[in-house]
Length: 338
Ligand code: NAD
Ligand code: UFG
Image 1 (spheres, protein in one colour):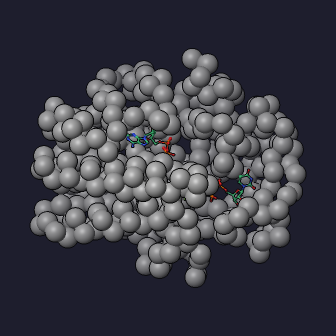
Image 2 (cartoon, helix red, strand yellow):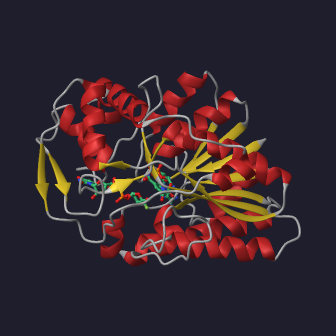
């Protein structure tokens, strides 16, 4: 298939590209490199031993989108591009709504203009908000608690309405739980700007010596050891879910939201231990207060993904930590040092 990949240079996009190219699918990447570097794409090309075009541009720019659609005539879109920091979204909500929501509308309009009818969208488990029950299944009420989460919720609704307005369109809204890990080669991985917000990149930077210790955000939650529990999903499994989703979208019409997780949770301290095992390095921890907005537990119901996509997660947390360490230790400064 010819697939336009927005945000393809980012963490999840680059891992998905690798698998798309190996299938092989034809891809065109559209990215403004606001949170990534062309180096990631260079490495994807080397790993896949395949070439593809890169269109530097913003999803809010309809003219740029027209150029890309005209030149490449994509049969489907995988839409990763967007801003993703929960904390920043409280500071600059309008930027989040502009890039994520308006950007997605521009993309759908371009798809409409160029008769492209299939889309797979990066949504997030954050759309569920506070758990009324666990695990979260796709029928759980949606009540996101931050502007970032609300952009995902609104985009989901917009895509649902767009699909409903047409006979022949399909959208798969993948609700990712906590993506971690890296390609086994250690050549591509997560390379956050500045001090990481998320647990596993933070632990990795402690292990490699860039940061002194991990601040554990609370140990008084109602979990096995008092620290927050999450459903971590290996980025390779997540990338595979996109391949399954794009094939599903090509075969059906309509809109489906689908969780992507393992159905198993790990606490902060369990992740620290797994990372110490994987790296052979100590990860010093300081227990501190809870982080505003955090919940005790997030866990995915995964039967819909198995039923509709024939997809299951295969990696455990040891593999997630091993591949993260592999990437971090080979690239202590991320892509910068290349
Ligand atoms: P990322 O920041 O590494 O990748 C996003 C990519 O999109 C980057 O390459 C960035 O330069 C590009 N981009 C951003 N705004 C753009 C715009 N307006 N026009 C064109 N390109 C733009 O993030 P990621 O972790 O790979 O996440 C990909 C998607 O998955 C995002 O939509 C994110 O919200 C969603 N998601 C991520 C997580 C996570 O924990 N990583 C969890 C749930 C959902
Ligand atoms: N944590 C720490 N110390 C840190 C960072 C995190 O103790 O330095 C803890 C958190 O309190 C939480 C767990 O580690 O218990 C995971 O935190 P992350 O920040 O890695 O992930 P979140 O579950 O908070 O959020 C992530 C993404 C969101 C996405 C959500 C989906 O950041 O964008 O997963 O479940 F929506």
